[in-house]
Amino acid sequence: MIRRDRVLLVERGRPPLEGYWSLPGGVLEAGETLAEGVCREVREETGLAVRPLTLVEVFERIIRDGKGRPEYHYVLVDFLCEVTGGRLCAADDACRARWVARRLLPKYRITEGTVPVIEKAFSRYEDQQRRSSGI
Image 1 (tube, rainbow, N blue to C red):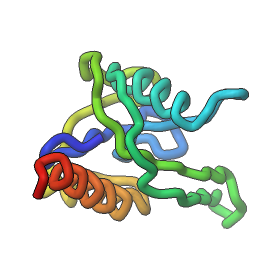
Image 2 (cartoon, helix red, strand yellow):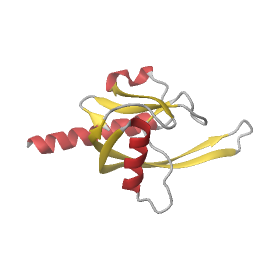
Image 3 (tube, helix red, strand yellow):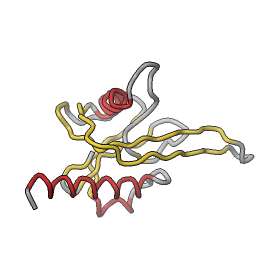
């Protein structure tokens, strides 16, 4: 979620990425579409209702244990969404949720690979703003 010059981030409250900030998200449930999963996970972690607008990025993250063996393997599918309701509050496995100014991103401990996705989302958001204003 992008709102003007801010992006919605959550601080992970549980391993494997406890203490890191990332985009809201999680595991799909059986039979759930990507769009349904995005809406549910964002609501569970932030209290906000959203509508997915466009796909931003698909990438994978492999987290290895101390011996270099794969411990977690995630396939991440990130969408640009618009907020349609709710009230921001951290919940589920997020211990904090906040709108973070783009210029302040370097001050946050953000999960690997997330900043390029955020920059791509800002670019998509800015393109949509230009199109909707007729520029």
